[in-house]
Length: 159
Image 1 (tube, one colour):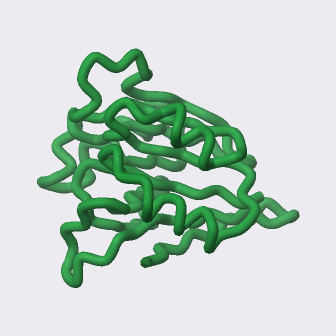
Image 2 (tube, helix red, strand yellow):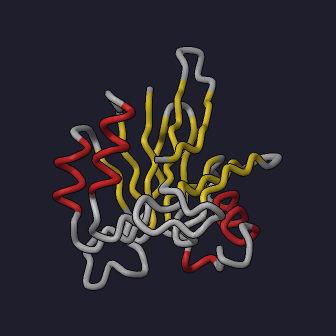
């Protein structure tokens, strides 16, 4: 199973389209907020099931602020992250995921990609495809691959 994890596209889809083209067939796309009303365009680009949550720039959105979903054999907590002070660190969001019984937490908001494999929680932030803020400022996303044996691999990829 191949999962494309993105966030903070802010109604700009050129880089999202490029990431989808580069990755080829994907089984699931996860968008972690700040789509800015472009959910239907994102769904059309994805061409596969889409899980999406609202972000702090998704004004008047009817999207869920948070979700818990099963991906492979893991439970994942999806949120934009702005309610968990993620600009200051990931401790609060990890605590929330742990409390929900999730081994994965996926969030955006910071526009900086990370993969943090803690003792019991894996925290993923794909960064931003539209307005990256990390050193080098390259648009980024994460690919999650689940093997036939259930093993999960995560990789930050850049455009």
